View 1 (cartoon, rainbow, N blue to C red):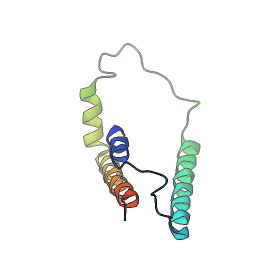
View 2: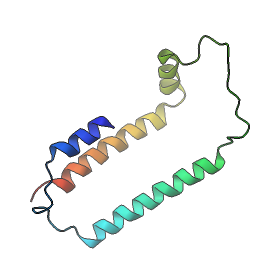
View 3: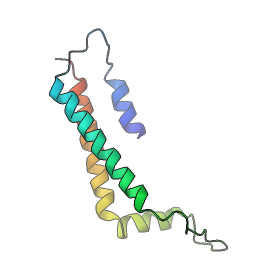
View 4: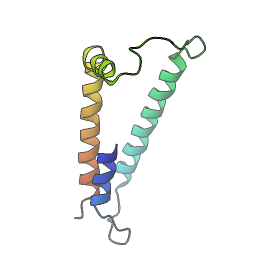
Amino acid sequence: MVLFLFVIMLMNMNTDTEPRKKKWLKFAGAFSGGCLLLVMVAALKEADLQNRMAQTNQGEIGLIKNLGMTLFKDYVVPFEISSVLFLSAMVGAVVLGKKE
């Protein structure tokens, strides 16, 4: 996330020299944001937050090693999809913010 904000900061976007965006581009951004909101609401709706219990008195909880093993074994596909999504968002931010 910090890298993404750093790229946006380096683009040096000034509002007076910013070109007008096309309407279809604004619509596409609003549609993408709405789809993301819909997915997040659906994921939170399916989450069973009431019956969650915290595990205590176990020495393996909270270790970075266990987090890495879980990310790269059980969740490798969503992890890689999110990395490609962040990379494409960064490229998109540079392309949209580039001065013509």
